[in-house]
Image (cartoon, rainbow, N blue to C red; front, side, top):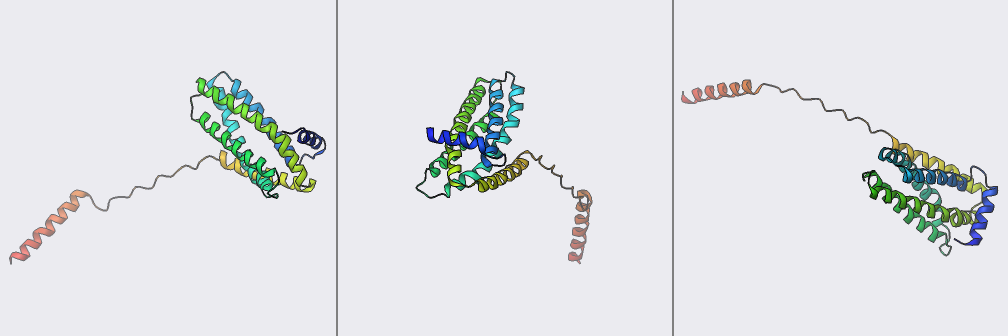
Length: 206
């Protein structure tokens, strides 16, 4: 994080509109940090899992939408630009967040291992958000106009909502296939076969 980028980002946050993609990202960041902190500090396993149930889909939807709208746009900037390195780092850090969320969802929330994983997640989010709101926000301001950043904001919101709806949608109940009625009872079918065989033997003996 450079001092120049930090100053650029602070200046941008003072003037950007609410529809600017950076403003929307910052809003999500604040909410995610608050949830992660509360989850890490929660005492009961029930409370921890309830908070994880809110944080996991929100963070997942945020990450996928940001990758699609923001990181991919930075990767399309000329190759000599530091935007590529920043976007690649963002992808890697998002994958680490995904792994920690999966670990938390599959671990007993009453254990110290769970709490340790929650602490690492919170610290990783703090680091990631701090760099993003400095370096990434500065690069977005350097390469895109106000109108383009607001257009990206609309794309981000739309993509995030679509992903979130898929994540929280309840799976449809599977309807059990109807049982086929047997065409004939086994005993009756066996008797029919026996009679047919008897007639055939009598015909053959004539």
